[in-house]
Image (cartoon, rainbow, N blue to C red; front, top):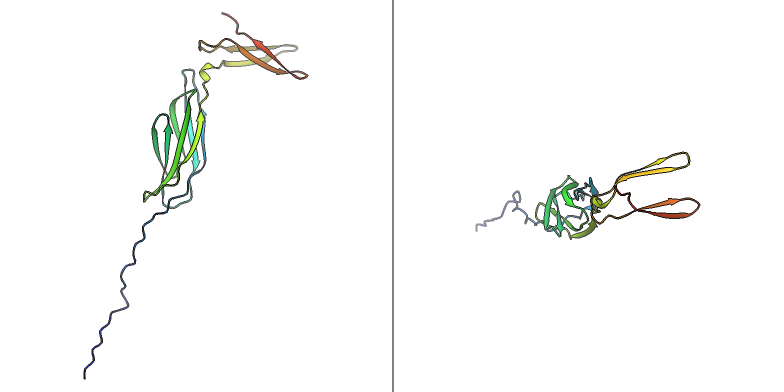
Length: 168
């Protein structure tokens, strides 16, 4: 009688199944938008800033800006972006999320803000304090609807004075 034994080697095992990455990265934190450098032509710059999540496979922060239908994909590590020549006096909605190298996206979050229209504000306002008087000076804006300047001051309570601009 002859017995044959067949078997397999335990040294080489087949590769394990590769599990695809389907986990979305955490979203960024401390998302903020600040208005910078306004000018008299009605434009400003907006600095968008945030903190990246700690996810090792984070690729981009994706920011959509409405109503202008803008889309920015900012690479990990940059943590800020500046928008130039943005109209003053306009409302914006920012929708943002993170994306990893596999294309997984965090849930979108929203942030809203409005720019201040400084083109309608007086320029170079200055107050010179004398012995018993105070002299104010400023430059009126070119805005056609400008018709007065308000002063509020404090002296034994709160009083206000309505001052019309000096005519040329």
